Length: 116
Length: 111
Image (cartoon, chains in turn brown, cyan):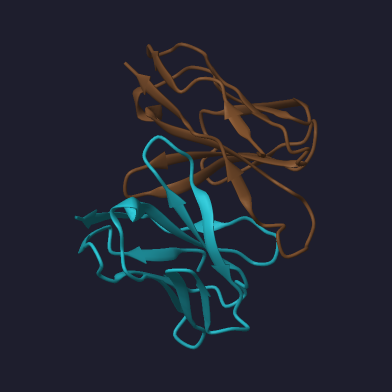
């Protein structure tokens, strides 16, 4: 069974701390994504990566950065956490291409971050 | 033009009833319309998807109805069960581009 694993399910951090959220997929997918989920706002794309060493800004990249040193791992970094970054963070991966199953995202279980 | 508007925000349905969630979009270039289902403590998972060359797609108790002229699509859950209680997201995209997500609907099925 294919999997996207987010190592931290719950984190509590203080304002100003540096936060790392790790995501690993075992499907050999080239595309990986970080979303933020807030009630009533749906899923908002923070950053995505089409391949190793590549990254693209999504809709809400401010205050975040990412790292993709290996194909299977995509990390989200909050350089200086703020209270408005308290949220559920979802990582997803996707197979590339234009075949019918290409735009199917496989999500991890999420990382709930609380910034005090 | 990039938005996908989803309604209602929350929905309570009696067991055995029909649950209906609606989405509307503006961008006529969208050609892929999936629905994702998310249970508490889990990430969203693809439930069913449709392309605009058909007006309806059915998988078990779940049906997508698609109205291209109205730029609307909806999810119908027949014979709703307590196990269907979850948050449902509609989305839309153009080919293999980024998905544009609706805001989500929290569905509760009362026993």
